[in-house]
Structure formats: C-alpha cells, structure tokens
Image (tube, rainbow, N blue to C red; front, side):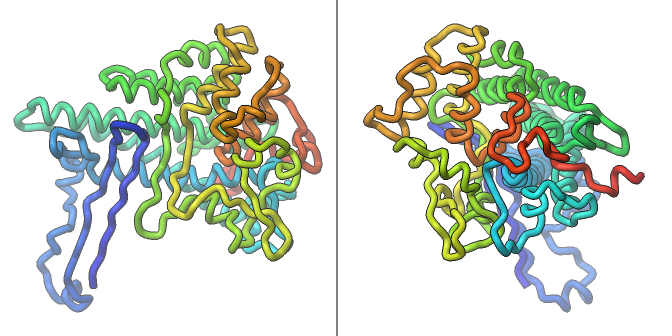
Length: 420
C-alpha cells in the first residue's frame, strides 16, 4: 500500500515565487507489515522530531522551503478560505441556491435560515479555528526550536518560518471577524472558549502583520502592507488603509492558494461550474453586468437546470485572496474619501481595461463613494468581499429580504460554541 501526500502553495506570483512543499511521504509496505513488523516505516515522525528545525523548513538552492509544520499551515489556510469565501457569497447577492441543491448549506445561507447545528457550518468553523491554531502553534514552535550550531541558514529558516506563521495567523483572525459573529448585534466570536470582539480580532491580525514586517524581504513587506490595507477596508479603519496603500503589491503580485495536486480544486469552480447544482451565480449579479468588461470579468452560461453557472475558473485555478487590482480599487476609494491623492477614475480604469482593451467600458467621470460598491461587486467578485462591502456601505444590495433586514449578516457561530 502506497501513501503519498504532496502539496505546493504560492502566495506571490511574478519573477519570484515562494513555494512551500510538504514532505512526500511514501510507505511501500503492505497492510500486514504494518501489523506484524515492529520496525516503524522510514517516513514516521517521532515526538522528539516535532520540535526540530526540519519541521519548520530547509534551505534548497539557497531558497527557503517550508517544512511540514509550515506547509500544514498553508494547507489549513487553503481549506478555511475555500469554505468561507464561497459561503460569504451565498449570504449576499453573489451566489444563490439552485432549485434542487446538493448542499443545503448554501440554500440555508441564501434563505437566511442557517441552522446553528448544521454540519457544514461546523466544518467551516472547525476549518478556520484549525487554521488559526496551526499558525499560532507554529509561532510558538519557532520560539522553542533549539539549534545546536546556528548559522546563516538556520537563522533564515527560523525567520522565514516565523514570517509565514505570522502571515497566516493574521489572515485567520481577519477571516474570523470578517465571516463569523455570534449575532448582528453581538459582534464577536469564540476562540478557545472565550468571546473575542471583532475589533479585538482585527487588532490581532494587525499586530501579527506589523510584527512580521521586521526582517521580511521587500516582496514579503509588500504582501503584508497589502493585507494591512485590505484589513483597513474590511474593518472600516480607512486611516490604516491609507497608511499602507503606497507600499502594496506591484503589478502581477498577489496572495493566493494554489490547487495543483491530489483532489484540491478551486472552491468556486467546485460550487458553481456548469456540471454541478450546489449553487448558482445570483441572477441579480448577472443582470448587473452591462459593459463588455463586466461581462468578461464575470463570464456565465445557463446550466441545463436553468440557473447561471460560472465559467471564470478552471478546476485547478488558484483561490485568489488579494492582488494588485484590489489595491488599485482600494487606492481609488481612498482618493475619493480624500485620504490620499490621485486620479480615482484612472485607477479604476486600470483594472477595467484588462477586461476590455478598447477602453469603451472605462469610467468617463470621477467616481463618487457610492459607486464603489458596484465597481467592487463586479471586479472583486468571488473573493469574499461583497459581504464586507454591504456591511460597511450599509446597503441592502439585491438580497431578499434586503441585506440590512437579514437575521444573519455574518455566518452564525455554531451551536456547540454558544452552549458551552
């Protein structure tokens, strides 16, 4: 019986791409040997090894490669993000349920009737808590790993591992506040049995990313500044966003989770492709697509059952969290808010023109603040941002009932937490 586990994940594209790879584990032994042979297979990790430097990473051709602990954090992040970014779309006017869905989770979110004991809800909650815990455990492990003969390579391993752990700890805390809440009025989540307010959760994300800036490479710093700018938008702290926006992604840089091996697939492809019936592109979003660029950014086809399916993603496409385009739209909004200087229309058009090179879809006048909810609805669609925007702009959107009338404006915390 052969066991193989291998994953590659990237957070930046462009000239330099950082890859984190787990150990490829192969055990060419029979089931009987596992029972009868008292010698452990060569790929077994003993307890004493869990605190070793190799768990954090190694240096290969002068580049850092994440070890099993760090790769496990990335994998947990991919799982949590995949679940929550799609689920958030079902709460708003981005994703709707089909007539006969395979997944009741999306239907319950769409209908504002999510059961607190729903198994998929519990799975999504467990995934984000697992992600947070793995990242924070990795931070603790970096501090406790003993190096017998420290040198430049061992220092680099620890520094890069700490950067990755802080990066993901921050993103986990931000997602907790972005997507979960005890209620619309009690804006908090449970962590380790204790209530944590959304503002404190966002504060933890900010601190992890600010701490990670020290010792980070120039490219890593741009990633962190981009996430801090995004955090400012999500939390309504526009001063924070403006403080970081000038140091964010360059063109073609992004933060994404790669789906290239085993059964991992792009979450939106899995939920919305033409051959499934879990969920559909919301008909109101399709109706909102007027220009050539808008239709190119959100390509849809009618499925056999009559609902709209998304053709934007292939099965193995990465799950995008943030990129240069989002930073351009954030910068344009901050210009409109008069927090930074610049040409807001030109910034928005730098994104639009990627989908219509003729320029016919471009804005002809400067946008006002109210325009950004619609711009972002299309050009940041299927990123988990629409839920954030309806809340921060205080809009009903095209949901029924209106978003502001919904019982759940976040995904509810599962019953197992509230009854402890």
